[in-house]
Image (spheres, rainbow, N blue to C red):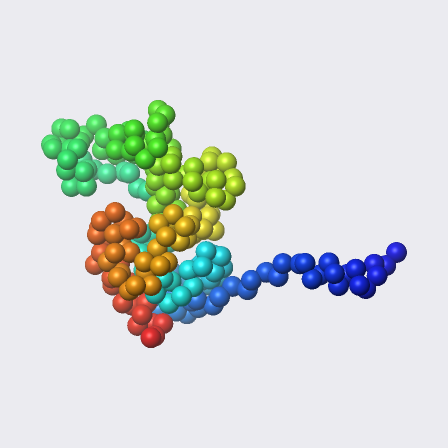
Length: 228
């Protein structure tokens, strides 16, 4: 039996129309901004960036460009979804000078990502169980680190934590989704970035200014490629 026309119109009036993605960046622009991505990768990632930045409201010029610049630096141009904890003893002393004063102190943790992660992340950031430091090391394109942040993000997207770990580590979609969530929801950086203080945005993401020169280089290149 065919549905009467007036009922169909009533139902359609309550339908939620999908918001179209904002065209924030084209594959050609992403290709011009980066130096390591293939054209195929630029096409895939630009489509995902447009979709997920629209979803999280990172659509205005300053927020989007500041987010993208930091995203490129943090991820090595989308090369890393998982924090690299595989360091030599000498590098451990350089990265964590307050923890490792000598090669002898660093040696047991060199080239041992699990042992190192549990040492440097254990007992903080919500990590309260044995092995949490390694389990909740940084993942996604902008690293989500610690049980506390994993729990917040998992709750936000309505998925179990163990599934979230796999998704952030294995898929571009969730590595980027978690990064957008970190920028727009957790850190609330859309209003901050609208003020034009790029350094303040970098500090809020990184906790300091590590890699600032590279972040700024990306930001300037993005502005050059995308125009005023």
